[in-house]
Length: 392
Image 1 (spheres, one colour):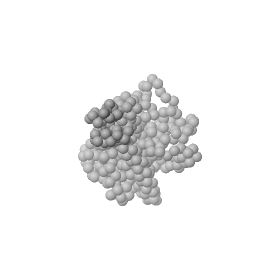
Image 2 (cartoon, one colour; image 1 turned 90 degrees about the vertical axis):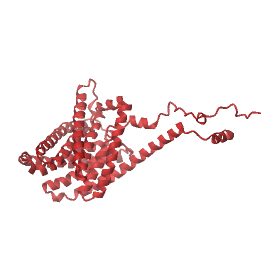
Image 3 (cartoon, helix red, strand yellow; image 1 turned 180 degrees about the vertical axis):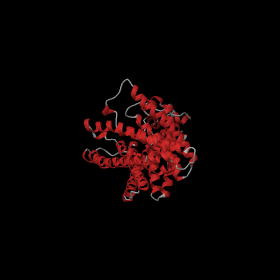
Image 4 (cartoon, helix red, strand yellow; image 1 turned 30 degrees about the vertical axis):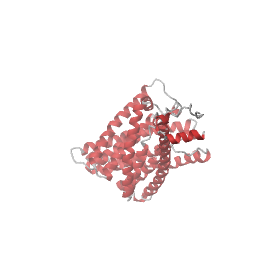
């Protein structure tokens, strides 16, 4: 007499065949890759500047731990970006010419410059620093003229209040990051390239200031003459301050490099005046951004949840600590000595909270991928299947 279950076929896994995923069970990692933020290199920017500021203020061990972590993060994000370009080229390049998302790609330029500065300052590795500096120039040229040319010639353009935000100032940050790495290399190489490298740093510093004036005018106009919801106040608005902070850092390095380049000596009053102007402008933004943050999270009860754009708020805090420390060194403003360590600790706390939230998000993604792979490819033992059928 046959068992009542004899005619029932065994599951596909029992016969050694992998189950096919259902239409609505697309691998979660592909969805995450498709939606990867163009501004995710802000992670490298934030980690790098907190590392450099820690080294400036007497925490070399912390600086080197963050430096090692940053190398891993930089390589991992390059891999993720390349995979996104291969698997989802339409989304990858479409985001690049999107008014709201395109400026996020400038984090790639700035992150490369920050990592180059880490190699130069923390490891005294001029060869790797120079290689990253060269890559930074290529990326800056390619992205700057691709993105802004596309924005200019597009037939259909969004309204100003739906397209511009503090993220546009990442173009300024990328330009000034190139100024910083150029100034650091200029201070450590000999002739005949020292003068040329200082000129590159000076030119980038001036171009960055020009871009800030253009873009900040539009951003402030959007602030004050268009409706502003809590969702519009995204974390990259802290780049309003961060762009001025990195401009201050680049100006301070040019002041320190002046004895090595006669044309910088003749420009010292100009360099010092504009460096203080940049620092004062960045300082003005801090209370304003704090007030807007209180309005967003306290009065409007906007939810706090992890978003890669939050790295765009950590970077300015670390950069303000670093630029104030460097300006004190370049111009003898010893009475500002309290500010750099305070902002470093605030930036470090913000970095820890954001990194913890990111790690939880990545752990959840890894667990989902592991479960999906097990469900698709794991072949359960035959006794286990028979026991399950008997219980059924």
